[in-house]
Length: 313
Image 1 (tube, one colour):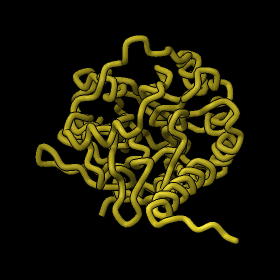
Image 2 (tube, rainbow, N blue to C red):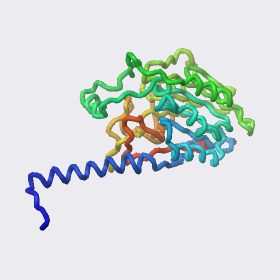
Image 3 (cartoon, one colour):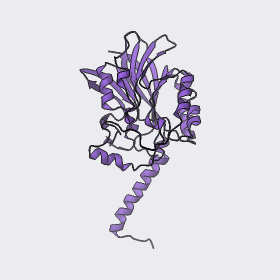
């Protein structure tokens, strides 16, 4: 005879079962269902052929993530004109060799990078509900947070050296240029991570370089103070990551948090940002990883983005 449970137990048991299924799906399936987002952005001068820019972000590599490594390697088959890495490559201090192996084929292309907080410091176990509580009370993400006392140092120096040796340009509070095989010159302006208050806009202020074919702005965390500065200086396109697209999204509603002061409607994908009487395109990558202690994604599959830049109208 099949056991019958009173209604007072049936409903909680049902909720628990659904919750367990969602956790199993978000960690075991969706967090490993890598996707390529394709976006077209009209920012090039007239007469310029389209450019293909591959943006990778928030890899959060953990040792042993073989599927993620193979997928990252496969992106080289897209043959981009150049690559932009918007940071948070690590979630395991032992994973630098595996990260560099995964990015190896992409390092054959021209590229540029900024770092995020998880490149410099190892992750800590924290209650993910904290993000929702702090959002509800208006205390989270207003200015970023300095590194926690006793934060674990990641061996980011070796990663930086490998990127530099491959010819990728470091943009942490710096400017740089990429000269493409086509002869085009791309000027890039980048900032160190605003999430841990390492950004120093005064070091790179002044706006796009007039003698370049295109100027782009790059930062890990899309805090409004940074977006306002880039937009007021008339950069046509800003590339960022950090938000994980919200990571756990509600179907037909969207992201609940961005882990910064950017509004949730712009947690991933292409949008506009306005400041100082000017408007820039903003692309926020949802990234392809998670913090090792919260390995879940829901309604927000891991991604990289191929941006096709075309002529302005």
